[in-house]
Length: 336
Image 1 (cartoon, rainbow, N blue to C red):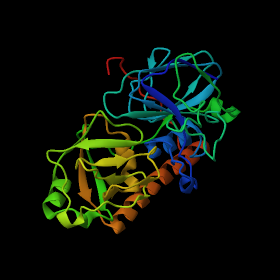
Image 2 (image 1 turned 180 degrees about the vertical axis):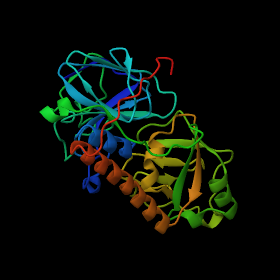
Image 3 (image 1 turned 30 degrees about the vertical axis):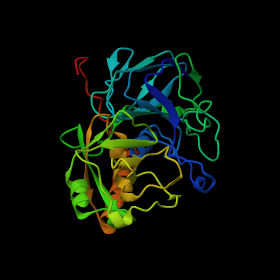
Image 4 (image 1 turned 90 degrees about the vertical axis):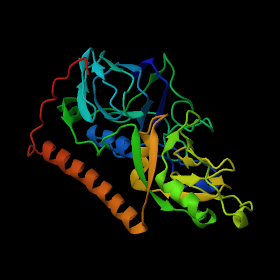
C-alpha cells in the first residue's frame, strides 16, 4: 500500500489510456506524457501499460507500507527517500515504512511514479486510467487527496531485490521553457490565409493558465484568421489528442489525453504522436513553436521513439542476465 501524505496539485492514476471506446464518446485518457509513463513501467519491471501515478508539478509525499521497487521518470522533482536524494529516470528499492518526497519541479510538468506490480485499482472499460470529467476509473474517478491509501500490485522477489538502475531520458531542448513540436497540416489548413500560415509556423505560442489535461489553450501575438469564403460552420467531427483546433477567438487549442471525442472547430494541424510527450512536459506559461512535418517524417520520428524504447528493453535484459553491470546511483546534493 501507499499512504498519500501530501497529494500535491493534481495526482491521478494513469496508464496508457483506453482504446476502442471513442466511438461511444469515451475519451482515451491516460498519461499526458505516454513515453515517460512507459519507461517508468519498464524500469519497475511492469508491462508498458501498467497503472502509474501521474504527479503534476511535484509537491507530493508518499509513505510505503511494504517493500517494493519504485521508478521515477518525467519532470525532475528533486525526490528524496527518507531525506536521501534520488535521481529521476532511475529505479530504486524502497523499504517498508520509507517516505518518498517530491518537491515542486523546476522544469517539466509531470512526473510518473511506477511501482513493481503496478498501482492496483480496478479496470474500467479496459483501462485503469482516471477520467476526471466522467468521474470513473483510477481511484474512485477522482484525483488523490491527502490521507488516501492506494493499493499496489504484488512485487516479485526479483523486483524487491533489484538494484538501482537508470536510463537516458529522451532529449530535452536547451531551453526548458520553450518547446518545439512537429505538426502535420490539418484537414482545414487551407481554410486559413497565407498570412495566417506564416503566423502559425513562425510565432511563439504561450501555454495559458486556462489549460488542463483536456487541452492546452494557447495565446499568440495575433489571432489566426480564416479565409472569408471559408467562414462557414463545420459539422462536428472526430478528434484525437494532438489535434490543433482554432475556435472563433483565433487562439488555438491543442487537444490532450482527456480531450472530447468530437469537435466542430477547424483543425489547422496535428502534433505528431512522437512529440506528444513534449506537450505533456510543457508548463503553464511556457512557449511552444510549431515545425511543419511530413507524414514520412512523422513515421520516422515514431520509429525513432520505438528504437529508444527497444534500447531500454535490451539494457534491462542484459542487466537481468548479468551482461550489463548496474552503475551505482550517483550521490546528489540536497541543494540541487
